[in-house]
Length: 300
Image (cartoon, rainbow, N blue to C red; front, side, top):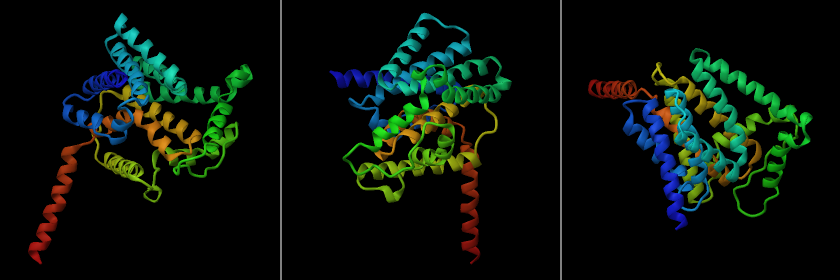
């Protein structure tokens, strides 16, 4: 019964994200469908009784309500209810994501109001958020966010068992230490596991997946559509997902846990990337190189 309930909520959340992406990237239904449902780590960790499915649904409800609420300038009781349910799911299941998503939502709503200043708005909100992150403890000792991250990292370091934990540089609860450890955090959450980290079938699948996604990202950088009508939403995806990845990289040293934690944001990363990719231009590039190779072989 619980499996059916979890699966239903997860599918409902995936459908909500699918609706948002279809509206943000019109005419890309097939790409969006495949990118949403065919990322292996997302499918694995959001299925069954894993709580990642409910966490993803919480994020989806928030994104759906905010996207259509700001676009249509209508916040009916259904959208407000969905927003509240999403926030409660994050509060109960993984409260650090709730802390991360709130400034992203604030910046998104403001950027939707002033779209020409979207990037400046997101940058301003996140600079203010970073300052508050390190100074809130002077307002109240209970708001010592850097120490909370350090405690989380120490808890993972002290965990015994398993063979996917790796040695890392330990954090201290100050801005300099966090800045110094940022490259390590980015490496852990966006590039690992390396092929050399593979020890079993799941780590092999995770290594293949992250390397394919990194290759797709490089292709996206070179061959993407220049125009886009949804910059506030795209900035939300970028800033929110990067913040989640940083939080994971700062606090987790177990590669299995890293793959699990980052799985919930995969649709928000992969779908915009593939939907914005200029497939026609990419196809012409490969066709041109194939023709050149044939011409060279014929002339030889």
